[in-house]
Length: 127
Image (cartoon, rainbow, N blue to C red; front, side, top):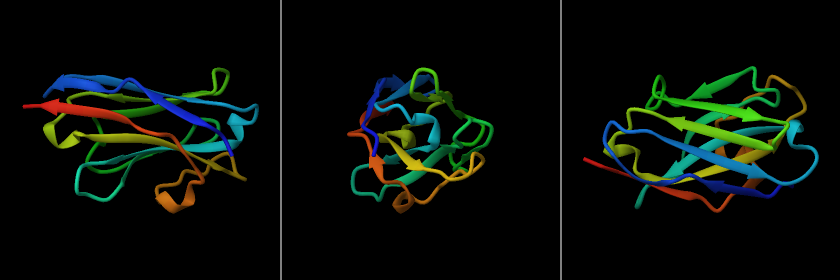
């Protein structure tokens, strides 16, 4: 497994932007597909975005498509989530997750597929 630490959350007004970062430990980061999930109070954890091992493939939830961008830097063992045009309904705790991927092009949107999770970073969007 890999250890994950998120950062970059905070309070922002609607229409604003935030960039979340997830730092990973270990020397095999490039063998993991990565994902971002979020969980709002009283709601189930939901998929936000996923990226393949080499970053060539990405996949987004419909609710964030066109506003959020996932990226990764394997040299820095990091994955990012750029969030633009934020809405109050984006308010949640955001988690990054990692899954060992046999194929370089695989992207995963199902939370149980992931076996390593960070502690989360809180994002609050005010109206």
